[in-house]
Image (cartoon, rainbow, N blue to C red):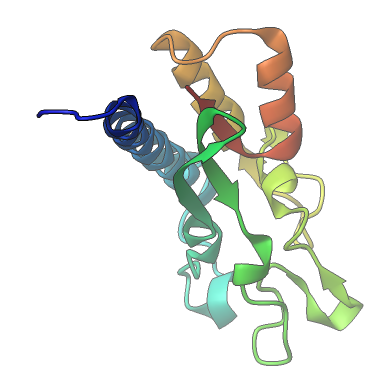
Length: 169
């Protein structure tokens, strides 16, 4: 490539770095989703007779509520983020009273579900006695530390509290 101005060079480098951040974010999201399948849907027992009106199958909406916000430039940093959108999941209803809450009790757990499911042991907000779980999000953080992408206690605490990942370059 021939760059005629420093600005052209800067834009080319930024584009490369955005692509790198996007690829890393996609890989992290894939690992997070693998952990959700393993530790949320399959751990302890599966299928669960309560899922989706006795079908034994989950809606997988919790899995699908996680997405990558493609990298952009914010305050001279290239930022890529993985988010959880709880409102993309179905609310409990008369036709599906136990999907992400308890319709009969007026309980909608969508905004708290990421925390409820990220436990080591029995989840605390289950209308049917609880289910033994492993922490899907914490397992993803452990994997990121193991492969060397994350370091620093403050960064980790922020990610665990907010249930999102932010990548900066």
